Length: 214
Length: 270
Ligand code: HEM
Ligand code: SF4
Ligand code: FES
Image (cartoon, rainbow over all chains, first blue to last red; front, side):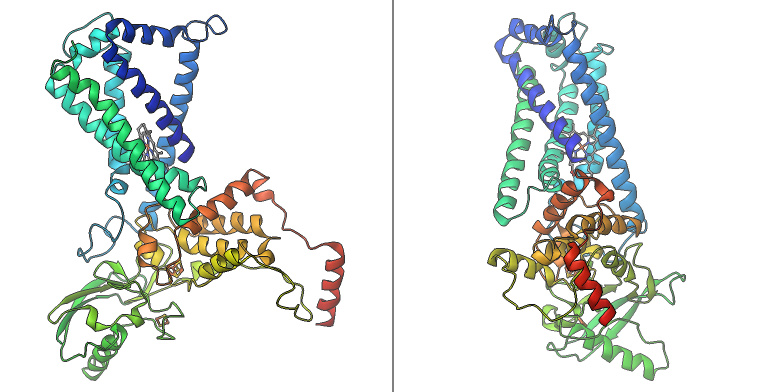
């Protein structure tokens, strides 16, 4: 869970950086998308590096989902079902973060979104806002529709919460949380990564929606 | 003060339980929570009803027997044991919910009493050290850095009450297990079994049916001994070291041969 989650976070940071190229104009953005496909040439065949990356991501996502399901089912059994305490006076826990509630449902939201996202921008199967040959136009066409931006925003916020708890939890699991100072640093670091990802991913769609990029 | 208790009543581990409502009047705010249950039980006994079963032993916060969930929080509104919780933490007229620890590895025996022997089996799987018997060594023969001694001592205060499990949204006993790992793993005497201990205890933890830790931290909010969250990361460190160095095949570290011979002498002598 921890290792695959951190791989996915690393990927998201790189992906966010790529998305921000939209502000550098169509040439830069399309060149970047093209560059990903020829990376490592001639050492690797065309799209070779991309496929290695994709393989790592697919394995990570599957392993991540398997571990998540395993944790969920163990928790479900250990708690003896869904209704645990009859008292509903402390429903929000004593000190847990809001983010820690969102991991399981938020994970499902992210999964659905990832499927939609691949259908739209990677496989080019669905075309909200009109089909286009170049990635830049595909993105701009899609994000001129408010409902697309809304769905995207919900998913990115889910990612933000996921990463807020995820960074903290993964690094604790890997043994980096062994003092009060480390705990403070991990919390700050987790907020920082989550904040950067949330803002970084939301900038392009809103810029397009409000017509700063077209 | 007058209060209303809503208490979980369950005849035995197989019976279906339910919440029952009792009014308790004229109690002093200086009474402990268990004393209020005592008062109620006397009344129930006089009325010919079945008194409420609950556990307690020391009544001074050191045995860990008296765990119940009060208003949805393990041990109630103060971060202490139920025997050390006093009625001044509540207000006149309050309706207070009292339920047993709820976790599959802790079956309810009756009413508020649960079976926590799963903890004993986790301890048996590694919560010990091997010490050659014989004359006790001088107390200062093995130096321990102050920092380690303090942290080990903090972890050693765990009283195995099980509040961490009752509070954990995953039903995990990781804080309890981590307290033992930290306590023994930071001291020189705990080194020989350090890695087999963590593998054995975590394996037993999982076998008992406790959930997996996802670092939510509700446990440390209710632990009466304030076992720190960092113990969990320490356990993970030891587990990663153990698994990357041969995993469960880690042999139980044997004492050096000369120590072994001395030990055998001792055993025969004994
Ligand atoms: C495919 C969709 C995804 C699903 C279904 C999913 C599901 C989950 C669930 C359920 C958990 C929590 C386990 C628990 O606390 O119960 C979790 C933890 C985590 N997720 Fe995801 N997730 C997904 C995508 C991602 C992505 C894209 C990232 C990267 C940003 C990520 C990073 C993490 C991290 C770092 C953790 C914490 C690991 C730990 O607790 O040690 N996940 N995920
Ligand atoms: S870690 Fe704390 S809450 Fe858990 S069993 Fe030990 S004393 Fe009780
Ligand atoms: S009765 Fe011993 S800790 Fe409460």
